[in-house]
Length: 189
Image (cartoon, rainbow, N blue to C red):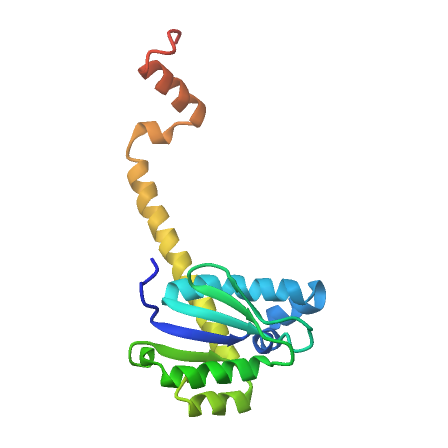
C-alpha cells in the first residue's frame, strides 16, 4: 500500500547501475540497452513500493538532441531523461542542491544510488545519503524475497481454509455441475 508521503526519495543513476549489476550488463550486451533499462525499472518498481520510496531513475540523454523528459511508470517510479548536453550526474547534483533548500528534508530522506566515487562525495556533501550499486542490488533482491515469502504464506493460509470445504476439493467440472444443480438449472443427475 503506497504511503501519502514517501519515506524517501531515491535517485538512481541508471546507466551506472546497469554497468554495475552483472545481470543488467548481460542483458545490455545480449539484448540491448533498452531491455536493460526496462529490467532495471521493473526491479525498482517492486522495491520502491515495498520500501515506500519515490524513485527517480535518471538516464543520460546528453548525446541526444532532444529536451529532457519524464515518464511516470507508477506511483512509486519515474524515469527522468536528462536534457541535451546534461549528464545524469549533473541532474542528480542539482536535485540534491535543491533538496537541501527544501523543507521536505525534515520529513523525508534523499538517497542517491550510484557507484561513482566522485558522485558519492558530492551528494553526501549536499546532505543526501549514498547507496552503492551493490547495496541497491542486495536490497532489491531481499525485498523480492520478502514479498515472495509473504505471498507463499498467504497462499498456504488461504489454501488451508479453502480445503476445509468439500466443494473446494473437487474438480472444477464437478463443481460447476453442483452449482447448476443447486440453482435448479440441471435436472439430470
